[in-house]
Length: 260
Image (cartoon, rainbow, N blue to C red; front, side):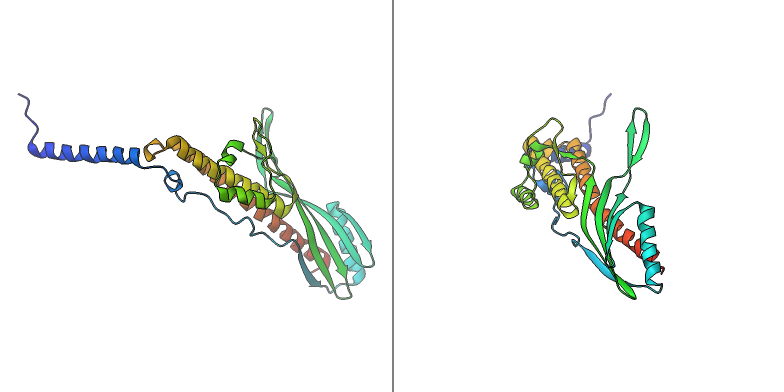
């Protein structure tokens, strides 16, 4: 004989069914918002918080002025930089590689720099010190792209940020819209990050349009947004690495040519 469920079991089963049903109903009826799509909602970042356009300082030296000149000449020669000198002033055009990318191809794996940074160092020599100035900092980065359709769905604030950065979205291609790769260090950074943010937040809006309610949100959408967040964070960090690499280069240069 099969025993009938006890009243207590039926009671708890009824409660469980009600909780599940309410959960499903809640998900179906709750409209998606940016905060429900991804924790924190829209991505925001101040692209105008940039590094100075130039760096300068004064270095004292204890060696002779002739030895200082020889050290500068040797530093230029070893690094194969272009330079010119006139009346105790050296103008040096510098190039350094920043970061490392691993590239897989059918014939093997290769390492390549993430970018090359160019800048000008001006050294003015006096009797017991010299003044240096670093300016005209430019970058040549790898090509990255954003999805034009996602950018078009970005919030108004993001589109205004794009405009403020001086970036024009351009025309749609199958591969996406290419972001700037060459130019002033700060300008390239602002344009690239502004475009990546617009793409990311536009995709959040696409998720809202497609999913409509909390129950319609798909895990793969959230995974893609997380990947976009990682790309933005990497771009911001690389900008910092570029600038810090210039400062580290100048620190090394000063140590070598001053003899300190």
